[in-house]
Length: 151
Image (cartoon, rainbow, N blue to C red; front, side, top):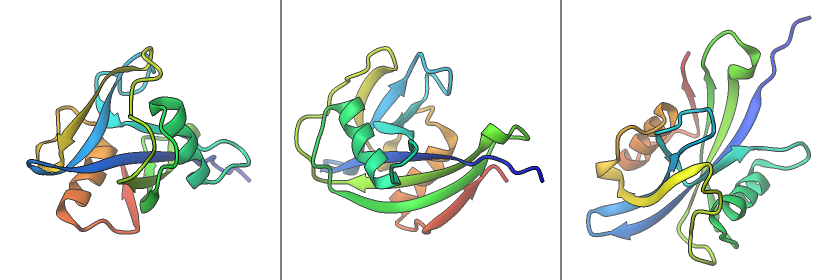
């Protein structure tokens, strides 16, 4: 039987209140080979064997932003595909956080060309497409617990 592989990943959207409403911290991707030049979650990455999506989100927040004690709130899961290659089958777990310890900063400059806060109502361009869909749903207050992208 031919089974496909689903690759899990965790995303962390740090949120705060700003002059134009809710703001999200985004990173400008570079040097990764995937969506370089696009804005994306300030912290995100693959879930490693033996860890939960929550643990992966906490780990990525520390590895990419240098922050700890991230108070994660589950936002949504997204099943997405980008084509026929088995590696393109994904399950993404999105979290938000409004509290953490430390000041977010660029820890991996080879992968991150910038880090900035943006109002959900004024996202930069371009944003990684499946992340833009999630952020727009968050802005609209209508995030379903399960979403899909690319089908």
